[in-house]
Length: 161
Image (tube, rainbow, N blue to C red):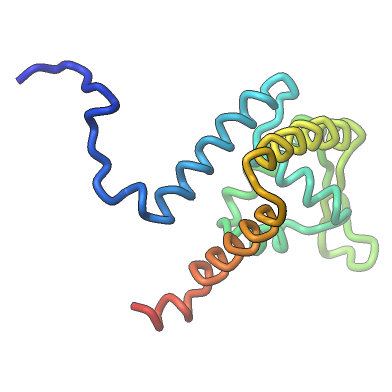
């Protein structure tokens, strides 16, 4: 048996290209690779961009709310938040309305990182728009949200199993 690399054209993908999940994953991988390369000089990852964007849009948001929103366990989100705090991109302060809770706020540095990252994200969005016809962007977003809803809804999953 030879340990030679096979020509990509010779590899059979069988039914994979016809599976929505496969195509969504391929698109996600392409989007992430592209945006990671574009944002490398800024020093922000796509995940960090998401956190910065949400904290920026919701000053004072608490980690419990972020945990629910992201569907992550508390320790995973805590690690990400602590990393942003260590870099002085966000800070944690007591909630003025209820001192038992702490909220998260962007710092000036974090706000700057979010703005620079948003510029990169929006440039990528414009590039993706070049392959879509008029109205297809809204249709694609709608379809993806419906897929997310049905797969994220455990009751619906158990009914189809």
